[in-house]
Image (tube, rainbow, N blue to C red; front, top):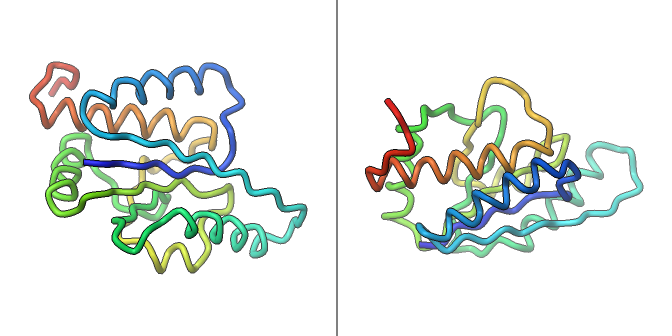
Length: 154
């Protein structure tokens, strides 16, 4: 099972980077996990131009056979246990799952059109600096739930 996280921009908060790195390390026990950091340099302040450039960079990294899940504020909300169940279903059906964190203004229409599913991490809005850390922890939690390990408490 292979999981990739595509994300835009570096983490500038040291605690967020070190926390994310810890969960990436832990995920290695459960799956082949790849972190793809995209740097999109656009001098435009026009939102649609920014989203289009980011979208093109994201779509270049996605194969036709990939199952693409956008981390999006308008996506489906899950409890941790329900997310684990959904993750297991995806893993049973797809060789490669690609999760994507978009830019500050969301995704281009082309990325939305290519996606297979949208997940919301919360009804709250998080800084882009925190989303990889939160996602990494929830993905790790999902695997521990699936394996019946004592990390998650009901």
